[in-house]
Length: 372
Image 1: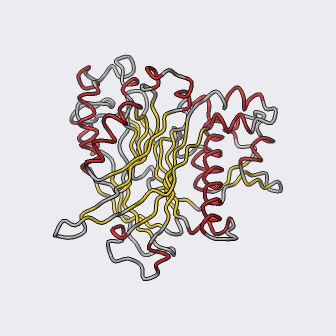
Image 2: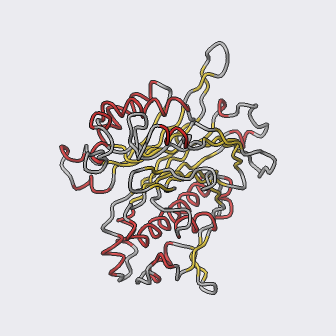
């Protein structure tokens, strides 16, 4: 599951004047948010716009009772704030089911264990890679969005149809990453660069992990680690961000760079192909959702579009089913101009995909669409 839960401090009457005040209150919305999460009971949950104190006081203890564990990090600005202020800073969270009923006798089996967690701070990366670029310093470094990643390892209960005969495949590593990319449409260059930073760090994480458990490991071996990338990317399907993630490349003169002075400093953040004039990443990713399935993931009075995504390793993971959109007849019959709404607790809809993991690519599974 991928879900932007709409942070309390952003759920204001000024922003969402079409929603009744009582339906904007956190005490009301949090119950519906948790009901949404529990309804689908995903093994892995990534959340964005989670307020710091609400992670520790609400999301973590509530989901721990449901046999999940989780990690969290606020946006980078929290580092400069007093304790009384930083608790209101929002950030990203990842939860995974660590125990699951495995038989009728109610015995619990372990699904995932956490190997390591990683924080990706885009402003710190911008500072380290500015290379004299005023645009990198003034436009990218000033945005404190983050990415968060958890290296998980599958355990016995993760294999519903029986554990692989090869013990090396039973403890499969899965890197789950989530991010909340900068929101402003005027900063499409920042969105694309933050995404390039994210993929650069994922590649570094993969390389280090492979080398740590395989002597002499090298980049090509990183394909042994599954990758799941979820988040609010604040970018439409025709953006440079999605083009880069799905195609594995983006032209160095892509219009989203706005012809600003990034080219030299971006060479360190991407596998650069000088001959073709492209920036690339080595992962083969596919998107779980497409516009013909989910016409919008963010639904407000002023804007309706796809900006949230779940990407997966297309060579080793197969989607078995996805959760479709809200019924458009329901939206029309109830005169829903935008969300949040008394029956929809966030301005984003949750995304859900069921994925099959395998050590080799399978082309035989069917993609099934389920309506809410």
